[in-house]
Image 1: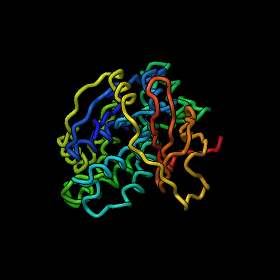
Image 2: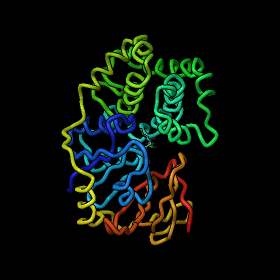
Image 3: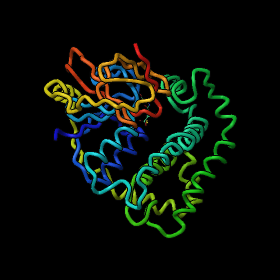
Image 4: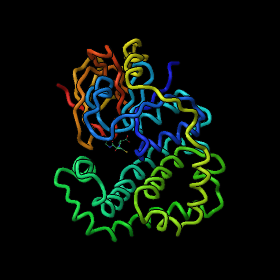
Length: 306
Ligand SMILES: N[C@@H](CCC(=O)N[C@@H](CS)C(=O)NCC(=O)O)C(=O)O
């Protein structure tokens, strides 16, 4: 199998989730550092316009969104499993809490407390992604105490689970729920000045954070974006044409469609290649990399026929 290539940047919390997954699985991978703000000229040929972080590449197959990336890694490298305590299926449902309301609350706290110390162009960019087109940091700041109260409840639930003596969320082995909660603790600890003090009220969580940090990130070696583009150009997508007769949208391989993240950002256009209940892959041709298969999760993305 070609190398696993992660397009990411060190400060990205959602990338930290995937780096922990790579660590749980003990994988070797290649690390391409991408810009924190657009333009991302060496990413666009691969993703067809999708700009969020992280993105995974395996040859000419491109995986957008951490939900799609984690699942693709579990399918290709089943052991050690991301479902050690029998959490099959349910862990993806859990991700809709951690990546939805829990992440949103963490963003409200970090931006509410720290936005005045962030570069204005960064606040403008993230403001519209995380808080919508009518974002207003003064309001986020004014609501900070309420957001911290909500964050405290959610980390409190995690603390209750860990207080039972389990080493990890699903028992004595780490799995997907650990990656899903760890990246939020990592974000709060590292990006909010009050984070370390806030987290110290959860002693079991702090001890668990150390255990997850010790798993580390697998074995990464750097790669340039140029090398990654060359690998895509020299490869053909491994994804086969796959119909899904049960697709409620009536989509079929070959249909011309666009895919747009609910978080906004560019729309990616291509032709349906593979349909599975939880994922869609589209084929797209690009001047720099030739044909790529771009994978998106079904959840969180809107598909329209073009
Ligand atoms: N649903 C996406 C969310 C990813 C996300 O929000 N990532 C942040 C960075 S942690 C981002 O893309 N920020 C804008 C950027 O990197 O350009 C996923 O799970 O991958």
